[in-house]
Image (cartoon, rainbow, N blue to C red; front, side):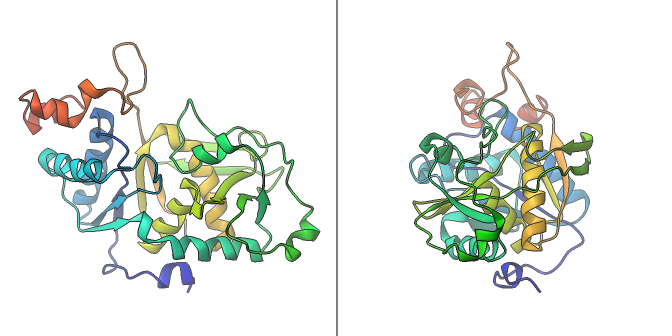
Length: 280
C-alpha cells in the first residue's frame, strides 16, 4: 500500500468518509456554514465518518482564537465530527509526498513570484486563482533525475501537456479542464518548509481515506489539479460535491471580510441555529 496512506493512523474503514476543512484565519461566515452543513448532512445520511481538518498552514494569518471559534460555532450550529486533524503537525507526511514527486520527475525547483508563493498556502478562489505559469524555471524532463530534494527551495508540479482532466461532480455535473490552458505548473512547496494547499489537501484526503469531498464551486479547478497530484502519487481519487456559492446583496461571494454574516455575529444577534440554517 502507498506509504502516504499507511503512515497515518486511520479510523475504522467505513463506506463513507467526509471532512470539514476550515482555515483559522477569520470567523466562519454563512457561506462556510452552508457548505459544512451539507458535508455534515451527507456524512450523516450515509452513517459515515466525518473529520474536522484544521487547515492552519498559513502561520502569518492562522490564530488559535479563530480555531476555537470555528469549533464553537460549528457545534452551536449542530455539526459534530468524529476526529480532528491539525495540518501544522503533519509536515513530515507532506515532505514524503514531495520527495516522491521529485523522485518521479513530477516536481522541480522554482525561484519565481513571491506573491504567487504566498497565495499557494491558501485554498484558491475565483478572484485569486494562481495564474498560468510561464515555465521559466521548468527543466527538461531528462534533467529531473539529477534534481536534489532540498526542502528549503520552492517547488512546482510538472503538469502533463495536451491532456484533459475530466470528472463528474455530484452537484455541478460533468467537468473538464485542460492543463496548460486552464492552469499551468502549480506550486506545491514553499521554501519556508510548508506545502501548498493543493499538496496538503491531496495527502490528507488520502491519509484519512476520504471518499467524498464537499466544498465550494470556486474550487472546481483545484479539483483538476488535485486529481493530477493523486495520479502522480498513486493515491485514490474521491468523489466531489461542489456546492453553489453564497453571495451578498450585491452579488459578491461571501468572504471572511463579511463580518455581519459571520456565524459569531449571527449568534450574538440572537438568531437560533434553526434560524441560521433556514438562510441556507
